Structure formats: structure tokens, C-alpha cells
Length: 368
Image (cartoon, rainbow, N blue to C red; front, side, top):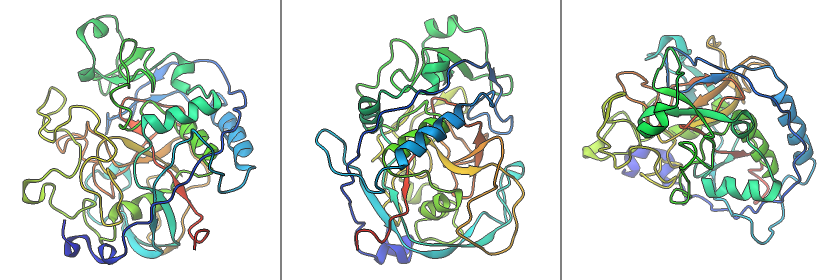
């Protein structure tokens, strides 16, 4: 991608790479119990929801408050992972679009949004990163507590599918797999040992929140996420421009072929790709679209004010949380959500084999 294609952001100095080591904290007890799976959004079918309202979000908030009680920037301790964050400059951009592709998702109207500078993780949180968190805290994810999680059937063996007799009605390729979790993405017998640099999956919003607070960070707002996704470009479809494959090159891990029956994997991946795969955008952020959906901090709503906004935080309450970016399962014929303005939602305790996150730090002035 040329500097001209990336816009003014490409003329900035190379992204600052910050060694941010993490202070481990003991995890408070989380709520227990199980809930039956319920269908996801029929318009997307790219993930599935669990029933909400059993206190898990409140439990995660309690853990988050305990984690946040420490210093905003943690000390460097042996054995903990170092993360790379990039400075996203303050600015104003057009959020959303006047040409929504999926009307029911609330992609419009386009509105001008002002944001202060902040740091954003250069990569999606990887299995290696999440393992460090779990090893330091003993954290147990919600998928592990529930005892199952949703997995795309195309990633499952016939033997595993033979024992499953349920599916999401609106998206029958989503199957609840007993024992599926971040350590076992396709259920018992599967492993992440060869995928430590791939995005962690099967993490709920509550799980992501617990990780972020332990790390002294937080989830980005939807506005921050979209601003970062655009990489300094204005009103473009993708982080790199309007053409999906400039000069025939793949810039994201999405579905090629016919969804959901035939993935030709022309981009090199049937499932997730390493978090450093594909070219970064103008801000130096990798895989902002495709690969794995990413949680944001915002509650879900589909009606937005066209008025100019400053550092919007989203609705004050809701039932679902916003996720952005699409995943390796997205195809234009069904889930055209690998665009910067695209959006979807899940309940905070939902998890699936295409859902992950990255994090954000507001301490943009701390290091300078």
C-alpha cells in the first residue's frame, strides 16, 4: 500500500512500539451456572448468543474494579508477555456511512466524530497473550463454565458433528460443541499448540473485559475502534481503501468461494490467520477486518444522532454489546461485515469460534 493510498497517517513516524508488561492479579470468584443457547441475529448468522441476565457481567465488573485499583501502567515482571501498541492521533472522522449495506444494523447515518489520541493494540489478542493471563490469574472463561461454545460446522469432523443434535435455527452452520473453549477451539481433541500466534477465540465480552482490566487497559469504544480501523482514510469501505483486492493482493482473512459450503481459502487460510498476517493499515494496525470479530465497549443500538460528537461512549445501557470487523467466515453474499462501518452484536456472555478482541489504552500522554 502506498503512502498516497494510506493517506496522511502514513507520513507519520513509524508506530511507537511500547513494552507494556502486565501485573498479575488474583481473580475473584465468578458467577456459576449454565444457560441454554439461543439463536443469534438472523440477519448475520455469523455468531450466536447465549441467554443473558445471570449476573456474569456484574461479576466481571467486580473483577475489573479490583484489577483497575492498581496503577494505570503496570510494572514489568519476568515471565509476562510484552504487547505492542500504536499511537492513534487525535482527530475528527466520519463514523458510519450514508450508504449502509445492511440496513438493520444501524450503519448510518454518517456523523462527524472528534476523538482524543489513544493507544491501540497493534494486533488482536493472541492465544499466547490469553494463556499468559490465565496462567497468572487462574481465570476460567464463560465457555468453560457453561461447558460448551458455538463452533462453525465447517471446522468440525464428521465424528464430532454426529454427536450434535442442535443448531442455531437462523444459521444452522453454528453448532453448540461440548468442551469447546479458547484452549480447544473445535472441542475436545483440538488444540491451539500450533496456533499460539492466532487470535484467541471463544471469549465472551465479560472474558475480554476481565483480561483488559488485568492488563490495565480497556476495550475500545465503537468510535475508537472504527477510527483506528480507517487508518487515516476518510469514508472508505476497508482499512486500505475501496478495492477489496488491490492489484490482486489479499488484505484480509475472509471467506472465498460459496458460503457456507465451500471455502477455497484463496487468502491462505480456512480458519483464523496469525495476528500479524496481511498488511497493516495506515496506523500500523493488523487484521482490523476479517480473521476474528472484535468486541467493543459499547452497548448495541441501531438509531444514531447525525449530530457532531466528541468522544462518544455509546448508549448508557442495553442487552447486547457491539462487535466490529467481521471474521474469516464473512462473505459478501451473506455477511458483508468486513467493512469499517459494519457492525453486529452479541450478548455479553456469548462466545464462538470466530469471536475475539483487541484492547485500548487512554494513556496517550504518559510516555511523552
